Amino acid sequence: MSLDTSKVATTNATTAATAKKPGRAGVVANWADERLGLGTAMKKNLRKVFPDHWSFMLGEIALWSFVVLLLSGVFLTLWFNPSMGEITYEGSYDQLRGVHMSESMASTLDISFDVRGGLLMRQMHHWAAMLFIASMMIHLLRVYFTGAHRKPRELNWVIGCLLLLLGTLEGFTGYSLPDDLLSGTGIRAADGFMKSIPVVGTYMSFFLFGGEFPGDSIIPRLYTVHVLLIPGLLLALIAAHMLLLVYHKHTQWPGPGRTEQNVVGFPMLPVYAAKAGGFFFVVFGVTALMGGLLTINPVWKYGPYDPTKVTAGSQPDWYMGWPDGALRIMPGWESEIWGTTWSWNVFLPIIVLPGLMFTILLLLPFLEAWITGDKREHHLLQRPRNAPTRTAVMVALMTFYGLMWAAGGNDIIAIRLNSDINNITYFMRAAVFIGPVLAFLITRRWCISLQRQDNEKLLHGYETGVIMRSPDGAYSERHAPLAPEAAYTLTARDRDEIAGLEPARATDANGVPAPDSRSQALRARLGRLWIADNVQKPTREELEEAHHHPEHADHAELEGITADGGGHAEIDDRPAH
Image 1 (cartoon, rainbow, N blue to C red):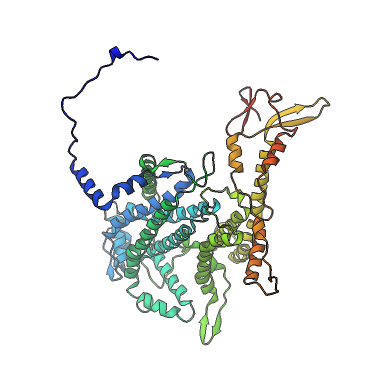
Image 2: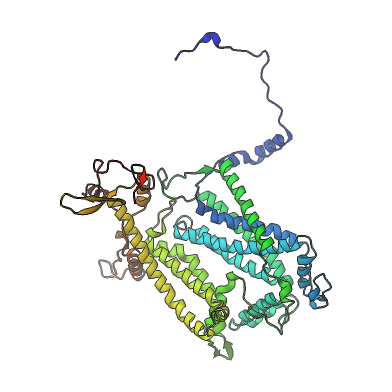
């Protein structure tokens, strides 16, 4: 190619170029950058790359639900009166006009019927709380099942668990504020739970309620906790959670070009910011639709709290249902010790069990690291099937939680099924012990079977649906090798290290007992059980040998058969099934 210089025109300006005077915003930004160095930090972080996968949006649902909670909560704070002073209701809801109630209940009714948009905001606030806790639970499950809780993200896992705990407490305090019959019943139950704590329980109840139940201080105190203390802790933990996410970089699914040292995805600006911003409006819109169309917590139906009454079929919000279920199926055990009554039937299911479950949840990453001896950093996610024992442990915990949650509705189940509530209670008492064990065994074997299926695809290819007949009349189905992308996904996992799980010597060469020999022996035994029966991915030699197996179709025998990226065969442009 040649360039015709006769048609090239050049111009020279007669005056030197001068910089345009910056606007006011530019002056302010330059002033701040010169003193704080924000430009360099912002440029680096705004170009930070994030991987793209639908499961990563589960955490964003929790984040944006919390934002909706803050926005709607500020609106409600302007009209809510957290007082237990008794008044006579004279509002617009005719059925309760003239009824004595607390000022908090009356202000809740005023928000619902007299403040423009008040009922919408109340219901949006309540639904956003439900979404917040539910999305945190599902996000934690996604993190655990995919191995995103491993080093160096153990601390972020702990923060996530604390966020779930605080979110649950925040939901309970907000649920109690209207002082209606249902929420008052819940506060009365909480008073009984505190009093079940041996020795100090009665003192705790007296100090919290400002005297004998119900007192006149519990609603103002819960209001302070609900709008100030717990939200402040939640904001601090969310900020720490996000900072650690940026510092450690985001995990990603294995794939071509993705390693433990890089991140393949889109930058924060403009791609990820636009997607995250759009997702906020999706969450906000769905919450608004739920708040406008789906009734939740209709306090006007329950009426004001009266200590002499209990709402028929009263049940807490769903996230508090599992300890309520444990309470319902717990036998009525009590003991007299040193002149004090120990109510095991309340103390164990309500105080001990939730604390034990959250402690187990917090320690899961550390227990796994200790059992397996894995001290490497992990930035690539795992398919749940490639960690059978880990997956089975969480499914067992989910089964226990689900059965406890179902037991919390034993009275409703008995009514709906026209069954004996005692038989349902006896069944649940056995199921909460047997169910998790069965779930663990079934899930573990299921994952191992899926591992074996993956290895079969790698070694022998996938079934093409093409039936071949040999010269001697025998029929066989032809297999075709997986597409490189599909094969990469199946092989992008580590082999389990068995050598490091041997028990340590109980004594040294001189016969002196080795320190920590018992704990090391226990760790080795648990480590071998952790990876027992796991199917390891094929070695390179096994893959090469399998690809030369006569069951595999070569190019001549499979002329006209191709495989798409997902490993599906087509014959002459027609799917082969």
